[in-house]
Length: 407
Image (cartoon, rainbow, N blue to C red; front, side, top):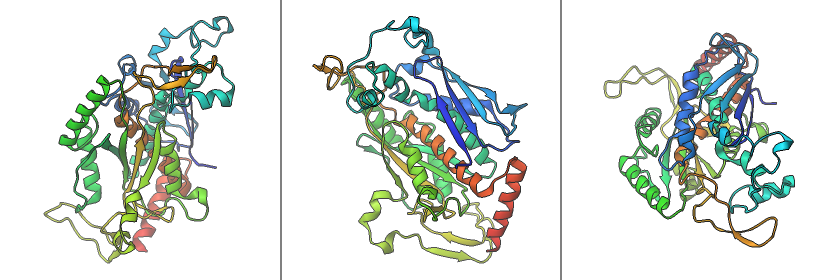
């Protein structure tokens, strides 16, 4: 059983979204401002739809926190849907409000509409689209913010940035002196971009392409990259298929709406090169190297790599290098110029339903990716180090780090 568990509930136009996180040790300081900051980041990004102008997400803490710190019990977060006021009868739980709005019967190609309706025997597609909507990821982002706070206590930082929208790609140098520093720099630059791309030239072209798609009533997908720095060696395991960290991370990212592919490290590009060129060679430094004038960085003693083609994971375990993982998001299936479909009631050809939607949500998907990676890494971290309180977890962690330094 996972050490860290979470559940989310709520419909897109229902009264609220709820997130429950179980397993966080007691004694972790929780900043409501940090949770809301990530919720705001999720709502931003060029290409988002009109819904973002309605909502101003805020997570209210209902349980698990007292006087600013976790107490060991499940943490419950409540996020109000401000658009609920327009759907009080249409999304009511009362039988008297039955049929207060027309049923949705025209499924969208590429969406959960038709498969979900058949699976759950629903003749109104709204009963499917309300939960399958990406609106539910607001709860995941809020819970992921707590996981980030936990990991930060151990020097682990997580971030993301967009590397491609449509055919426009980020241009970057592949060989860097310090990978962690480079990843953090890309993240900081991405936060200044309307599309969360750290390349200013590519960012501008992405904005232009999104504008073009908006005029045409179309949508765009893309690729984002998530990283985690400061991750110790040995998280995850090779002993069973479901304990492998790369598999768990891939599952976490694939669970995000519209994600169709995941890569770790070089990913699919690794097949273009012989093994001698893609394996991360292992080196050993007997003594720490003090801060160097040109980089102002120290280099600790022990095993190290000069490349990170594996993306920080070997044999289902972290190898001490930064985790680097990418996800490909398909274009949003809701289009202003609807595709052909079939009415589930009349069985006649129709144009698919149009629901208010984004033109491009890749920048927001990167923030959601951060949350899912944080929740996954926090889970394996607690599996490794345990602890019912932060003090206990830190003692276990410090002992392990001391052990590694002597290895």
